[in-house]
Image 1: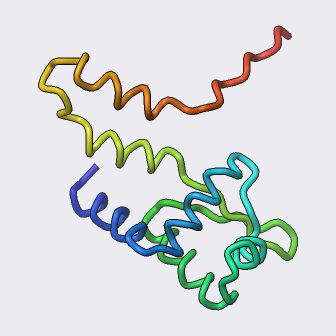
Image 2 (image 1 turned 90 degrees about the vertical axis):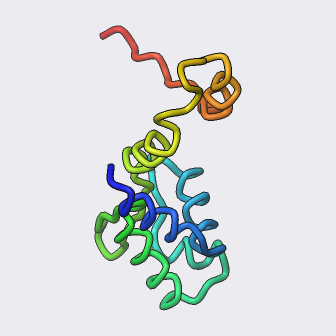
Length: 118
């Protein structure tokens, strides 16, 4: 990942409404949330929310998918992983014990579900 892409991504999150949108979408993974529901949940006018979602989309943080008359937004977790990896790539200088608390903090609260034997 290039520095310019990371800067674009971080700049998109450097605004309170967009950060709230991002966090809301993270909570609703993998189902996503419609644009209208995001606007209602955060009490933001629809046209303003559309602008915020456009900025997050151009930064690669969210992606949208049309479902009938609604547009569903989801976080692009691959992009988030790439940004975090870029930021932490040289962490610890070869001392994993230094990074252990950080890695623990980044471990999701919900471990992946076991796949049923089929």
